[in-house]
Length: 505
Image 1 (cartoon, rainbow, N blue to C red):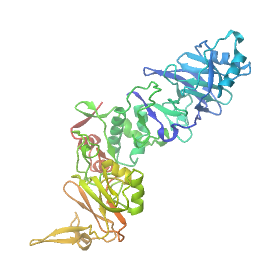
Image 2: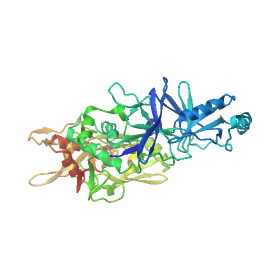
Image 3: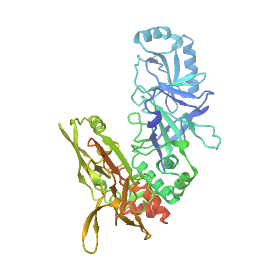
Image 4: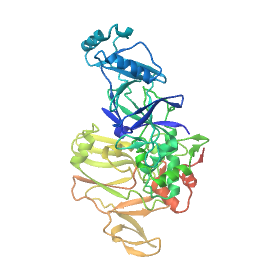
């Protein structure tokens, strides 16, 4: 399995400074997936990385090692100017002089160095937004990613208390290597270059509860591995124009590195080493989410494209959902504010009506009418705009009787509220419907259906009663855990949620 590049967006992207707290690091370049350490550095205070802007003169002489470049920089500094050894590429170092912020100051620097020691220099160079300053406790050096389109990658050289080589960035630590660059900005960003399964050690415990059944954790590991390998886009080599295609946030899949690892989730990763989800022999993205509320959803109803293996499936093993049925209450003012942030200014709200509902009970299209017009929200935009857990919800307003159902007897069909009925459980017991519940959940042949109990008493308030958590496409994590408890293996779980797919290496 290959190394991949993971952008550490959540904490270490486009910031002014990043510190690697390790006291001993190796610096090297990854060229055609081959990483080699060129030089080792030590610093009792760790290593600080920041953008290096300003003007520089570049010594025309090149150097094959840090040591020789640092020696030349030291000689030039004797002239009373700033000079640094600069990492360019494997076995390729230069010396930059100056670092001043004004061109006029740079010209003064040149007067101090011109013709001295027989050195010659390039024309004055401006900030290229690809240079970094690395500061240790008693020395510093620069990195310039522009000339070869590559930044060096740093590796820990001393193991931690558990015997693992990890890089400590303060709030979090990471296996593998860390690449830090500007990538065309006046800030610095960290990229974790890491073997796929080592990456999964820090993903699975963030995406699924570690106390879930082992077969569910294995299914999660396969999903996360498949998703990652279909998103990485390129090898582990640096690419200064595009630092990464896979981040560490919910936009991709949550990754918190070595800091988040647990023994059980690591066991699940190891037990499925190399396994990916395949459809017709090709590795495919294995989408997943927390809770379905009774049925997963076809991808065409969520993201608008069709896929034979991403179809709606009954999720009746989801009897212990991670996210229980929920209620979101909105006033007219709150809804208006949320719509305004989406540039939907429709005046005073008058009504909210689901226009199109899918076969699984999710709202595909929601019409919100106001005194100045109407707004139509669809699928994922509904969740995002209104901050809802899922699109499987019912809208209840003043005067609604939301728990009204048809009751059939031998001779007639009558209308009744569930709260006034008796319920026969699966075990055959008969009980009066509880009036302490917000919703009654009814299990059908292929889905769960919710019946809210209460309606708002204020005409300027709307209740959104919902089930599920997430987009609904692919594997329900709560359902997978239920299937595992029922004795299904991880391969059987994946084969169920992803129809026509198999697990393989």
